[in-house]
Length: 479
Image (cartoon, rainbow, N blue to C red; front, side, top):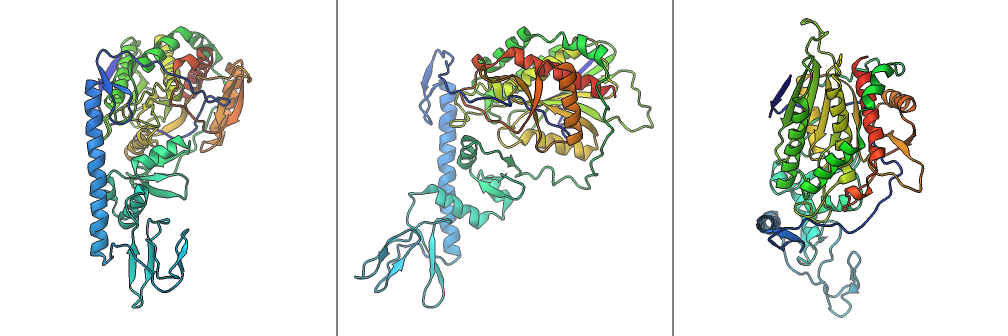
């Protein structure tokens, strides 16, 4: 039985699993698709279809108008605050500005020097503070000025295109889109907390430490199901995903279509499910174009009586989006390893579990998240929804960058150890030892490149993660 919908329901808690512990970065030429009618992109010069170029021009116009609005807002705010915009000259005394030369010995002068907040201030003889602004040559100084003046007004900042970004547990700051792309280019991990999704859920119950399996115990079920994992299917699916869509950027039309393609693939598998399970496939809609995709597998004859609480779900997840760090809207971003490989990993696990007729005791869910590259946006929305609705979660297996293995290094399965549940991570290691022919290695979050295509994917390596996902799904959902 299969049900489909476009509800706003769907995630996450528990352990995280990442692949590519020993991954190296490769930069290489990418063969672009052959477009019959192309023009130069007005933003970056790359070849675009006529429709894409028109959209690029609209994006550029919006960006120009937004910057003009920001500058005018700064000017208005400064005037309202009694500030004076003018070059200031010091007479008859020595003065050194921040990073500037000394002057004033012969009545000479200098313009105000930019520093951290884009201006240099002083007190005149009456103690009145005045602000000196040297010009418009440093746009980020104006960005800093806008943030300093308006950072307390969340809605205004959001309307102007700024986002509140967390780069650590103690460091949050408003940033422009250009600054966020700078974080991506610098490989700095961050989280977009603008909407306060997790903080907005009232009266969140304390996390429940569910009892985990003591050791792997479902070998008779896991081994035959995992044996159906196909490197050919993995290659075909991932190649289609990475070549059919120029980018999977979460705010782009192409990214929206990619999510819909994944949804259609998940539905097609669900339609082949046995009568002993109910498979529900949802598009979890967001305020941006690209949806997250959620599939839920439940036993038709539930072991939970009507007066008992719902059994917590087991979740297998990956993120479906990609990003070109220089031109996210229109630049090529196949994202084969990050995280096309993770999306393929869990899709193949989902496929073989459905085709085998496996019936879970606990609900079993597969999540493909939107907007991860934008700051974990999609998963935050799903988590907040689950928390608000009181949907319990038993544990999570997250698959990210499972496709690359270096020929010069020993093949391993990377197990992430930061921001995860230690007990669940320990059980995951025991699954690797029981069901995989390679060893696990502790690691932390990895990196990705903009020219990340399938030519660097080792599908036999991806298959090992799919088999591990099957083991996690079976062992956890039957416990």
